[in-house]
Length: 255
Ligand code: SF4
Image (cartoon, rainbow, N blue to C red; front, side, top):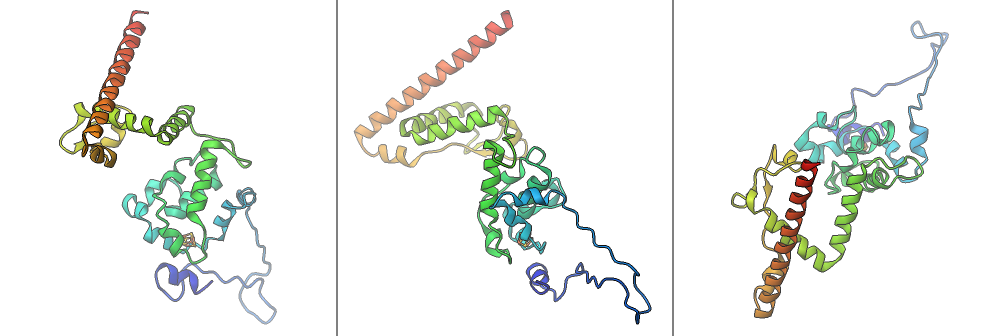
C-alpha cells in the first residue's frame, strides 16, 4: 500500500503524508512519548458499513488518481463539490458521511464514464456506488429515506413512462421541437425561460434537431404522411396546453 498510494497519485516513491506510529518510547530511547493513546473516530463509518455495495468506499487510500482522470472534476474543479472530499471519491463519500439530505446532488455529478473505476488502485466500484446512492436519494433504502423533492420524482416518473412508449416519445419530441421555436437561435437555445434558465445562464443548450426516425420516415410518401400527422398532433397538443395555462392564469388573477 505504501508504494501503491504515491505511485497512483503523483508518481513519487513515498507520499508526504504517510505517518509511522511506533508507540511509546522504549527504555533505551532518549526521545518520544511515555504513553501512547490511539483514538479511532467512527464519524459515521459504521453506518456506511451497513450497505454491502456502498461500504466499498471505505477501501479508499486517498491517492487521488480518480480525480486526475475524471472529466467532471477536470471541468468543475474541487470547490464545486462543496465539501472536504472532491472528485469521484467525494461524490460517493460525502453523501454517506454527511447524509444524502446534505449532499444529495453529488451522486448525480457524474457522467458514469467509468474512468475512475479503471484507474482506482484498490478497485472501488465507484459507478456502481453512484447508482446505488442515486437510488437512495430518489427512492430511499434501509440506510436513509428518500430526499428528492416530490416534483422531481413525479417528473422522472413521467419521463420514464414517456420514454418507454414509442408514440408518446415521438409526440414529446415533436412538442419540444415546436415549443423551442421562439427561443431558437440557429442551432442553439441561448435563453430559456425558468426553470431551464439556470442552465442557459452559463451555456447555450443545443436545439432539438432532426431525429433518425424522422429522417427515415421522410424517405417514403407514407412516412411523410405519418410525420405530418405527428406534427399536427404535437401542434394541437401544444395549443391546448398553452390555452389551458392561459385560462388557469386568467382565472387565478380574477379570484
Ligand atoms: S477512490 Fe480509488 S482512485 Fe480515488 S482516491 Fe480512493 S483509492 Fe484513489
